[in-house]
Length: 356
Image (tube, rainbow, N blue to C red):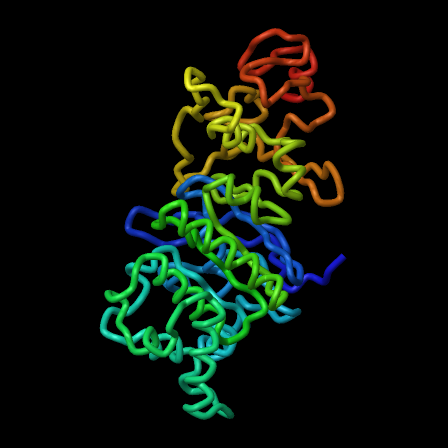
């Protein structure tokens, strides 16, 4: 078992707004090991990006603030560090690939200068060495004619090339962790495949840990060792990629899997959507955040937060259906309980006991 390079425990992060306090991240816990790719998946607004930006303290404080929890990188607490201390970690220790390269790059600066920004104010490295490092990293991420690209501006590059530059910026400091926030969102499928293959190659060459944030389950299946499924600012399920896809335990995870087409899906077959809308994080539900949209919801789901049930060493699920008294349901088959009868909640005498 590889060592944990990053440990997040019971993280809570909120934003103060004119409308009230938005509880964006609620009691999130996970770890990242050396050399692994951890996927974080969930629909828009579930807290993926806010969680990842908490690691580098990129969320504005205020209006954002840590309401509780701990983030430890190589044993050092992140949440109490000053901005000056965080500058030593950003880029050099932990790199960040932002969501949209079209807006993340500075249009008034050359590519070379933007890559070299990471070394501004750092001692012990000469301008010549900085340029050599920039050209070396441009070549590493597959950019042809690095000397020429070094002098160009972002508008002179294609979308795929800009994304490679974003990866180069994240890698130039040789960090231990790279956080990739939906790195292929604005790219076509051909370029997307090239960028994902590039990240895999870099992981092999540099043994860099990667936190990959996406809503694309296909990317998760191809890239990741372990997966974190988030909903309503909380962790719904986590486990190895095989456990998440083949031993699915949470109805929300099942809903995500059922809502995508596979090679076996016929053209006449309808995809199964997840009805309803995400919870209001100004006033989060007292019970399970997914209860209002869950076809298997029981009374207790609306009244009390589910416990974290440990299914295996890696596999955890926060769902009352894992309780020993809960009705047996097949969450991969819509509205079916263990006896073959349909029903939104799988009403049985056992479910009455769960409610108690």
